[in-house]
Image 1 (spheres, rainbow, N blue to C red):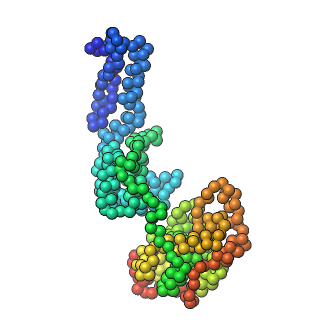
Image 2: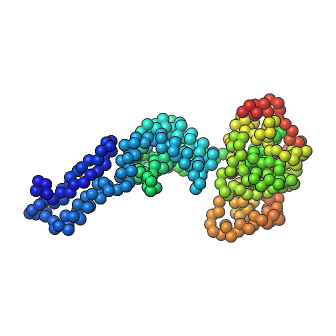
Image 3: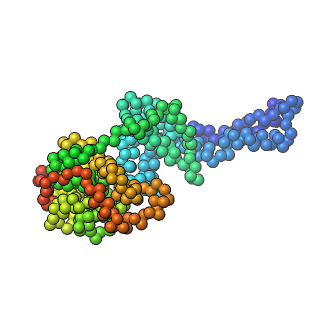
Length: 396
């Protein structure tokens, strides 16, 4: 009892100070109206303690994190390391690079020095306002906000519980709604693909024809090796009719492809097969597209030397063209999924996976679809690139 009231006293951790604090809460009057029975007093005392969070491991972990001064910057470093080293759902190097770019340019400058406990809806609202002011696209803003939320959610205690659970309010933060119909997804017409291939330099002509004729991602195409017996690399068969995707290239380094579904076999129609045979004549090893030093071509150099000059908006335009070509000829979904490296839509897709082993069925369809564009004159063999470009590539 204290001052005519039944009370409960307990110790609680307080953000900002090391020592715990003893607090007192009233339960009910000691006499008269409002007096509770003894069991009710005990029960209400427990409820008061529970609501305070004094006995909660989550509350303790949160206070401890605040007192330790964990900043957004420090937690972002831990998060980046974790998503690239964990065994479960490890992100690709390209994805990690994208996250790091968002952190370096937007998140760390604006939120880096804030305690992680202070990164909430209000901080998010201020961040979004700055992103709008920088005229960023809605999709980019959504992705940056998503990275911010991932960093906050990555702070967990020893039992795997989140230290700073958030109920994010996109309406309050004014996060834009991304309209898929308004997203910029440039593609190419058949006439434009023909024009690009015929205007490009010899080695780039073959690369662009391969991208448009197979739907390969650029990293997968640059990883192709002329070693048909290698099962650890992306290779092209000795007859140039099939590409077995096992690796991708980022920079000059081989890595695992974007997803497990990207590990696949892609068939090539006869017109492009002849084109590739001419290009690879006399070679049986190394990368299909390589610099004088024997390394895979750099994407940045290709954009600078050729793609940009031809006014093509990215390598993915060729992949979109191929997807449209497959749909135009109503290629069965199972084959489209295999060739494009997409995921299953349902359980039935798993049942039909045996079709990938039916080479005759695949060849029939790839010839039926064809290329959809003109290859132009012969390209000759794939000798070394010009000395100037090769030197730039080697230096890079």
